[in-house]
Amino acid sequence: MKNILITGANRGIGLGLTRYYLDAGHHVYATARDPGDAEFSSMTQDFGDRFVPLQLEVTSESSIAALIPALAGTELDLVINNAGILPNEPLGRWTSDAFKSAMEVNTIGPALLAQALIPLMSENSILANISSGLGSCGLNINPETGLDAYAASKAALNMVTRRLACKPETGQMIVVAFDPGWVKTRIGGEEAELTVNESVSDLVATIERLAPDQSGLFLSRKGEPIPW
Image (cartoon, rainbow, N blue to C red):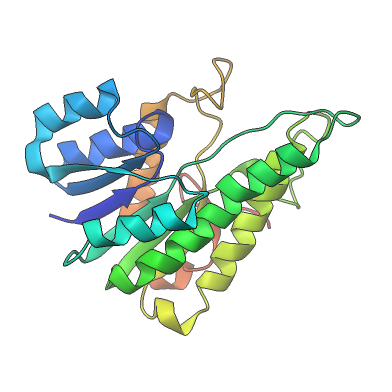
């Protein structure tokens, strides 16, 4: 049984990952801004003490600090930085608020949470940052859309991933960024190509077969390298 922490675990991909790992018999620390919602209540009934709902606002350093005592004595085997937002503002209507909020939630939050959790992670653990194909400068997907702040924040998350993987503190850990694909979630919309279960199934299979020489890479949900 592994100890797994997942952010943004009350909906979308985060919820799908949480349910998968609980069904597989693991111990999941599931964070959300509101851990008292209906989804979390039902999982408490279904999975008992293997499911630990925790309040976390990833943009708040004090909230991140308050999370650590709840994990005292726990050695984490897998951390999935999944929480994110998707501002949509076309050129001509860009605002500083959209860029700031995207960076705070999609880049700074995962970076500071990783910093706080790395001392609690086991030697051979995995830190997986959920990025996006839109964060690839090389692919430059859909530049005509208004997803510019989101794309920039995910590109920055990729750089954070790359640098974390090279830190002495990560030791034998594997640190990767994943593009989960275009998924039918509140962020992805109903027009998306994949269901949550399809994305999650590929992601967990890839996570299970990650090798140390893949640390620092940006990967598709199936484990294929993606251009930076």
